[in-house]
Image (tube, rainbow, N blue to C red; front, side, top):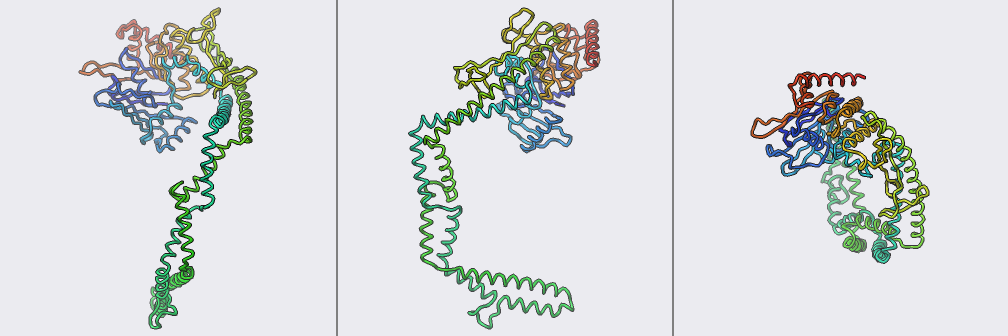
Length: 585
């Protein structure tokens, strides 16, 4: 859940902190006091679009900070993603989030103590928070959103089937597009293939090997300076271990080391320290002997071979001819050849390849049609359950005679998308299948079944939205739910039922509600009031927690606009008592 939210410099809010709790948090206040800024701040904290026009001129930036504490699989997924991105949850498992927006429109985000892209806040928000407001109700009227809502309700098995459909559809379209492109651009493909073959033939004749250019460079240097290298190696060997050309009176390193070791060993009985040094001299003598042997082997390999040197020159010239055309070095030339061979297979215009693509496209089309049919069947089964559960919730929201229907219809053919026969019907197919989903409302018995956008008033749409969210809550979803005046246009008994449903949601989720309705606010576990201060030169707003008598006064204000009215306070206290009793049930 979101434990705390601090907002600075956003709209009318200069600096305020919202201490939140599990269960139901209600935010109330006069119109224009700044309740909307709280929801705006939440949106910013979880990756929403920044509006520089809402940033206060002083201090010139808006900052929203929050502490998020998650549990279970959501916590595991979010923490793993944060750690992967370089952030770190606190020792107690909570995560600090921050979003800053300047008056110039620049935006920064911090997660777990590290600077992050704003998109990271969005990723966390998708798993941790769901925000529902008037705009979300409008979004629910879109057919694509209604289909997505049904797919979400249908459950993991349906999602797995849908993923398989999307994967098969992507493969099918890739094959179909590839085949069409080969036929449409045959001439250009053949020209490109000819150029690639010429390059591959040239590279194949030279047959470069990985790292060969560096090896040849080293060999050329050795051949060019063979005499100098031989002289240096011979002198070094004579100094180390003597030799046939060394003067007899000239001591070598090996002999000197032997003399030193024997001299020390002779006195080691008197002082053991000299014995230890003698042992170390013996190790040095062994090392010198090894170096001498390696110098001898090195001299044996040195050969001033003019023919070999000429061959190296010619080979390096052949490799340079390739690197001038295809890459910076020999390894790059080899990589170019590998890419060219892959590209040639893509450009293949032989009848065998075209026939194989044709067969593969037909096979995948059958697979897509089969999966689309299974997805459609799954949606129809889920539609019945979804409609029944939402209808039950509507009955509890003072719409006892209303009914929701979910129509799963074949997508008409003839649009931009391809057409396939799904369950015996020609339909337009997309990665989401061949269905169109439409939520319909029967407002009362005998009323026609109408799409939501035509059959629901503002208040009815608010209750439908809440009913859907209650149904979704039973199947998981984000642990924190935010409702921004979804009770607009509702009053009376319906308002009480909305409060009761939100309180029920709060048993399994953290719920944040911005409301004008006292019937809803009465059900809160924590009541926060946004209050405007006009005493200074600049209007500001702050948030405070109200309890006991203060809470009754706020409800009285919401009921009748009279916070000091004894009758209003009595009515508010009665409302609080009813809500408290309901929450205990």
